[in-house]
Image (cartoon, rainbow, N blue to C red):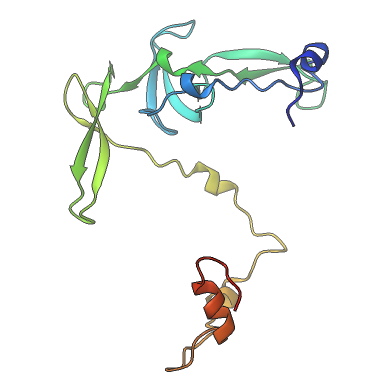
Length: 190
């Protein structure tokens, strides 16, 4: 829900956090950093430290790096936080981090090159270090899969793998009027 700015000025940010997205023309069009990449902070209070990107926020041109740019946040006192303060990772602007070259373990600029994939024959966009020319592989972050748990509403694998439809030659899988409606591009009813 979007509110008028006069109402937003009078509203506390605790009650309703403001949308901090950048305008479309200020957002980066192409990103060279993805979740799971090893980066080094090149400016700011954590300059020279390395870490793994945990989250990429494309609407604000920023990234979260595990264990870097920590700030204290006041929260209600609980068993987990008896002091009422917790440490929280804050976003870092993407211009303040650089990918680490896997061959030299130093920060590097990155260029994108198009390469033909021998398996599929399609062109792929790959990242290369400008300083050494080595490829920087994209890390696929699958850490979220550890949190998956089967719930009460999940389908049992035996039921999901069971074949429930067998084709019969000469008989369409749907009634003829349904097939005619699917093929009808202009939605004219017959």
